[in-house]
Length: 347
Image 1 (cartoon, rainbow, N blue to C red):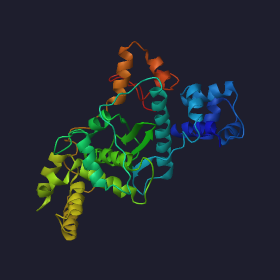
Image 2: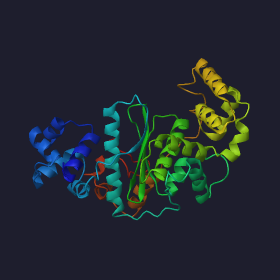
Image 3: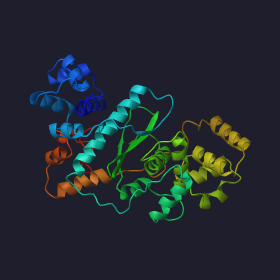
């Protein structure tokens, strides 16, 4: 498969199209499309234009994506359940790859100056909890609960994209785009879970930018727990836990009761038997699947991508010009850099 073939394949999968569906939309045979995707043949300029139009992108986007070997086939860090269907998470991974390239495409035209940076650590040398403490220190964050983790991440130049994943079994994905980190989150998740997902993906960005480790998911989870619930502050609050106490702590810290239980167990403030007892209590009330307070927490609302669109609009660029700078065929396809209140449709 050539790099251009990868770009076409990944963009097709991101749209949830089969080869037959894309071939029909572009006016080519399925056999021809298969050859293009597998690198057995290069599409001529007319065919490439039709393929780009059917995929909602510009020809320049496909060529740029295809100019870097592997640019559209990078594995994403993904927070998903073991029961998530392969077809579902592969489509989401393809979509993140496409979004990643749209961000990269636009950043070639726009300079993004972040107030902070997301540091990167060697997971073989740095404990995840220590990494979380260092990030909080570097960002000069106040001691205590994180009021909006999305805002802190965006201040460090992280582009966060929220959309309906059409499944509850995948919570988030993340990748680096050169020096720009990109995260996708499932906006249908309750706020407490979404906050933990953002912390989890931040952990991946900090710890696994250069290499993966066998226990990388556990490392990202430990990072998220310490980042959102720093031990030196929360440890005294995690003693003598009961459902009422967990309810109050959830309101204060913005994390789920189950995350609080796990953090308490990890820090050694509750025993294994107490952990099991608390989970049984949650189950008896039906709170293992849907906890109270989740809908009352302040929502996490990513705004950086929209703000970029607003700045470009204020500079006199039309919606179509903004879209094309990002590699979309026109404004109707741009689902990322859309000024607040002007979002058109979901991909």
